[in-house]
Image 1 (cartoon, helix red, strand yellow):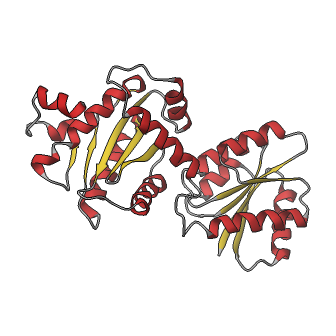
Image 2 (image 1 turned 90 degrees about the horizontal axis):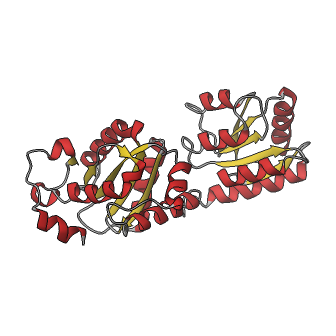
Image 3 (image 1 turned 135 degrees about the horizontal axis):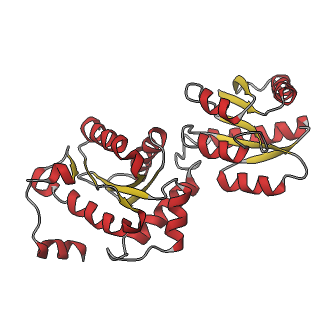
Length: 299
């Protein structure tokens, strides 16, 4: 059963589309709500969790593209369907870049509505069997980012790709980096579930699999304390033990240096075990590595 949200700054469009959906009498549709602005929709979705969102592409205030970007951070799984006019191709293209699944021309024809709804419901039905399906582009972006970080020297200049990727995740000026490690190899599905929990709970992050027992997390500096609290709760409440490291906030240009430091902090678990969050503050006074051992580890 799926909840639906319709967002359009024209009242009659909202109510007309809602009536069309009700007339379809699809058994998988549970509840349908409407909003007259992106700002209202964002507020509503703090408590209401639709899996299907219809949004007008051009609205006063927050437009459809911005709304898709904002809601994709707090709704999961979710499919976005854009409502557009014939002259909105440039906006529709931007919506697809932000994660829209399909678009419908206004006025919406019932046969087009049925086709589109059937398609997105099939995607949502497949989510339980393939948990990374809806976030696959984001997971791929994360994998590419951490792959590049893993080979960069600490003093490397960031490539345009890395800067663009961080910007897409809302990480622009300064950031921090965390590593989450498990004591034994885990299945791909297990790691994906852990990453989805981070995306469901936090904003302005980029998370990806580093190996079969490690996850990397990049977050904007403004979310550092929230990430620290979340990591601390995860490593003590997981069914299996875990350890995590979290660097201090630094300019984005120092991200390669942060990656190396996060590895050093995480390796302190060799002396202190799992179930601990290692930060610069938490690591102070604990046994550190010799310069030679740090060099071996970096190599």
